[in-house]
Image 1 (tube, rainbow, N blue to C red):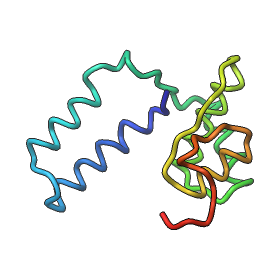
Image 2: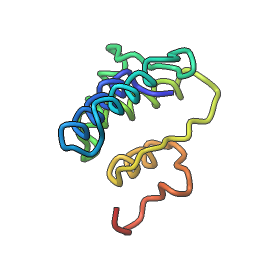
Image 3: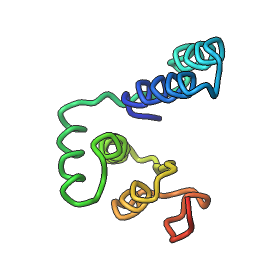
Image 4: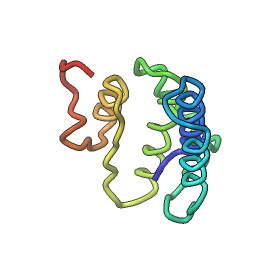
Length: 117
């Protein structure tokens, strides 16, 4: 499961890596095509007014960027509508800390500690 914003973030990252010479144009295009290849394999959480409102509340409670708040709000909305446990995966210390404070489960490799990134 991921927020609709992820698609743009992934394409942005691949385009930046190509511009910086880390990957070729062909590799960029291949990686981006994989994002679009099988949308049924990933449940996309749309950025609805409910997700946006929750993101705004999270921004007042936690030191987050707007995009990170949208990702966290997406997980929060899914959790509130279902009986499934949500394991939140991010590679950002502040986002993980906020997710943990909001009651989401983090995988062991994403524990919120003071270790360097």
